[in-house]
Length: 188
Image (cartoon, rainbow, N blue to C red; front, side, top):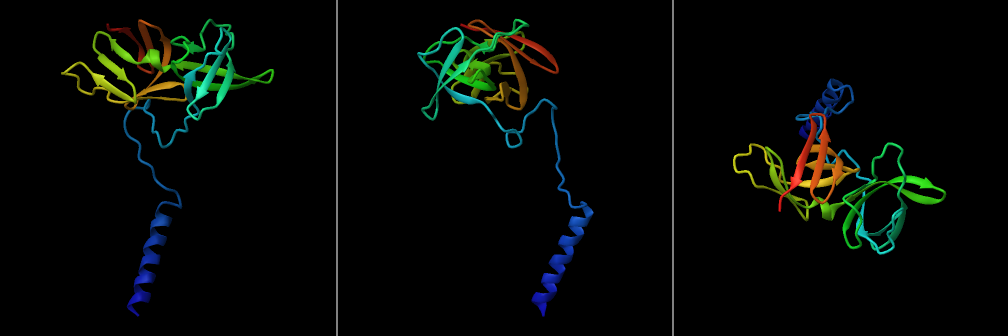
């Protein structure tokens, strides 16, 4: 008799909980609107190494799975470059595919992760992007230093701050989000 009463009570509590939420689950969000939840975002980035078959208009990617994929690099009318950080055989790349053109895969964006790694500095930041997703802050008094990084769908995520990479070169890094454009220079 006690078992039946407990089962009925559990069913009643469950029914009240479901009707109280109208059958919907509740989700609490907090923090910056530019933040990315890794669980909620599916990353379409393809990772690998720049192959010897790379040329001015084609990038050969040897994927982490060992496949060789060639992507055509589109010519843009607005002068933006699909390649950020250059292309050098053996460098680690993150490629965001953008469909096909004339039967060949097209790279929407290519980020040279080898070029991205290193020491970067600005007026208020001094950090080092390390291999394996770690960021080391070189400013002792910084309140919220970046400690991790990753590429998600062509954007750089530092902790929970998401940035578009506007420019990546041997000596400069331009990041942009809703707060503005942030310019960093490579520290030797």
